[in-house]
Length: 530
Image 1 (cartoon, rainbow, N blue to C red):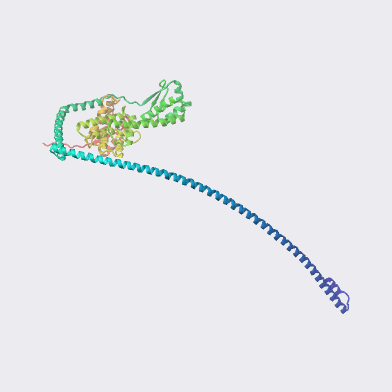
Image 2: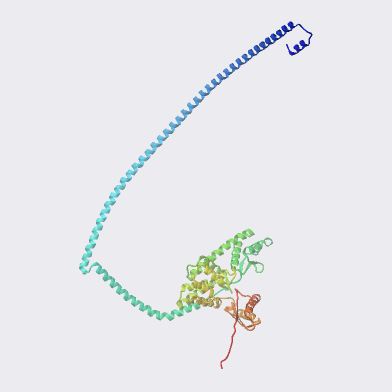
């Protein structure tokens, strides 16, 4: 009975109490019975479900056990197979090792047998050598005994011991040698006295001969011949690009149209002209002329010129006979081969000065080698005076100090134009040799008229300034001494006057190197005693 039914029963009309009690009891009994029936049914369903699950679980367990047993059997079989394979591999390796050991043992045994045979052979040879040595020692002893016996016999015959005979022989030789030496010295003394004047004349004649040697003046142009006019066009190139590339790479000017079938190379730097000449000749022979090829050939020509510089420098020191000059100084000497002064080749001039210095040093009895060294290096500054500021004298002295030259050589370089006072006789010799080399006929391109005109112009310029009393051009025009009137030019005005004179000389004159302007102011007071 549900709650709705109970509620309806309550709301119904009044029923007797006994009947209500019975009804309630029946309702409760029915509810209890219904609960037991329902619980029994659920119990059966549960028991059926549990039984089914247990059966399935036992089946799964049995299946798993069966599968595990099969896996175990398979794993055991695989392990046995692997063990068998490993065992077979180990057996095979063991057999190979045993075979290799057997072979090694056989080789070692063979080598041992060979060594035994060699040892036996060596022992036999040692026995033979020992036997031969014993025989030789016996023979040497016999020879020594024989020599001693002969010496005793000689001593008995001569009546002298060995030491006495040696002393007697030495005394005889010394007496003969002293006699010969005295005789030779007397002859040499007489010959030296007889040849003294003759040798002096020969030295002087040799110096004069060197001073009078022929010389070809150097020029500022070089000429390269062309095989035909068609090559001239190839050198010019399209719109002149080849000739521009060559001029830019070498730093010279090329003149093509003035001379038929020739190219004139113009430039004041002889090294650049030589590089351009070599490069142009190579290009003409090769035939391939274009900017890239021009750069390549110019680099090769520069390398050739460097090699020529080194060769010329080494040849110069060999010709003069000096040694121990720093390699860089040797290279700079070779560079002077491409340097000129008044048309005179600087390297040839230096070699000539070195020879003259050596001859004069020999005449005066000073160090000939040092004099030659100073003469060879006196103009070394000319190799760099185009690239560095300062006179060649200053540059040369700095180079000599840098490369640890002798102090006498440094002073000779500084003093060969009178810039500093000479401190040695060798410096004076180099001055004289330099003047002789430059003054000999044909040495320089300057004529006497040109030289005189330059000195006259120099003196005219200095004399034109107010306050100048007189002036003198000295040192072949390398220096001008200006004497001023003390009353008109004071000490402060001297500096301004020297600057003005130097400036006007630079503007109006053409000259090599530099000119020293030396302004002198002298005050004198005169009185008379009566």
